[in-house]
Image 1 (tube, helix red, strand yellow):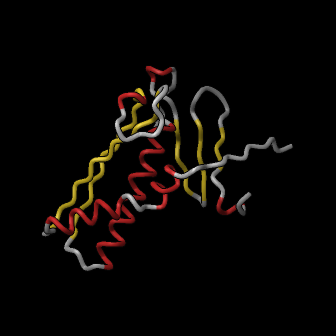
Image 2: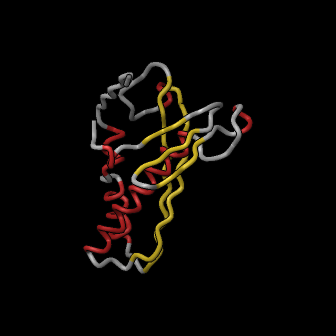
Image 3: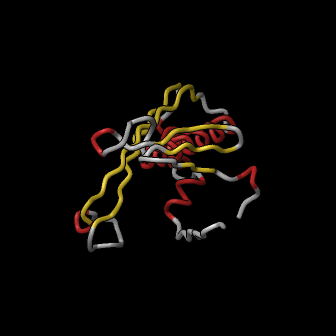
Length: 144
């Protein structure tokens, strides 16, 4: 596993509310009231979308700065759903349901069409976007 200073620690004492810490930062995750939670924080899927959106924003900002693009603000709206695989024309899986994340990017600044298109392409190269789309292995162990 990673060194302790790179770990994310999740503590759940009861219900769905989890306290998350990493490098001195603190976040609460919980399920919404309608799902039986206390709505004390973002749901796990909301945290995933937040992580993806922030990674895309950081990646776009770094690129725009390096290329001296006149980018002022970045706004990214994300949503998650499960869709029938048969309804997805460009998906390899054709049976069952698949996860779908919709990402809507808004850039402000004096950007031309080519720069805006390039920023969209760069957003899809963010490390977390690539991680989510890659084959992943999760190793779970019980620590005694």
